[in-house]
Amino acid sequence: MRADSISKRYGEREALRAVSFAVEDSEKVAVIGPNGAGKTTLLQILAGALPPSDGTVDVDGRVGWVPQHPALYSKLSVAENLRLFARLERAKPGQRRHGWRRWGSEGRPDAGRGDSLDVERTVDRMLDQTALGDRADDEVGLLSGGNRQRVNIAIGLLGDPRVLLLDEPSASLDPRQRERLWAFLAELGTTVVFSTHDVGEAERHADRLLVLADGELLFTGTPTELETATGGSAATSDFETAFVQFLHDRGH
Image (cartoon, rainbow, N blue to C red):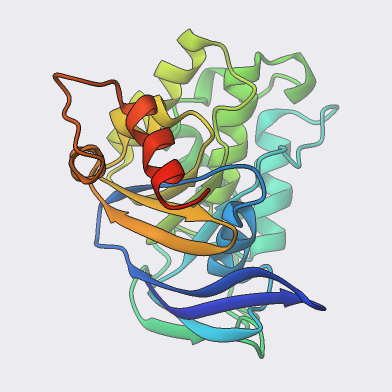
């Protein structure tokens, strides 16, 4: 996935200003920054859910989008939710993951309309991939927060995406549920781009960081490289302190 000079304006306000970066296959990339930095806006544009004012997004394959608040039907079972969203997504098993696509201010191109569906095979594949088979008939509203988030991610994976985008995926989870979530994501082998306010989580689980502030991309690199940029090291300062110092040094 590659973003080239992505900008987003709402009247006179610039939510994003000429943000450019690339994400490699199987990489885990964390988007971090203070409130109002533009993290969710960036992910929505990468997902094709929001058109940029300027710039383009290129991706080799499909993109899965998992918003912060699960869009699930609590009275339906896990399998019923997956069937519904499989039909909406026109997902099919073994869907092609490759093939470059581009979108920009004109919006995301239509993908897969008219494709034949095999909903049951798609649902069975997702239940197996996300280890939710034993909860298939359970009402989503009765699940724990961690399992509801797993269903939410399963919906994002229905189209067998090359890149999975997650907005604050662990925000409502307790520490044990968070660790299970990240263990699950690590096993997927899918390229993941996620936003988080928990910079310690970003340090532990991301291969690389994108630091946004006031809509500007200030830094891209590893957590260790960010610490080095502040003159600190893992031995002399914790990562959150280094991150706050980094923002302060750049006037944020």
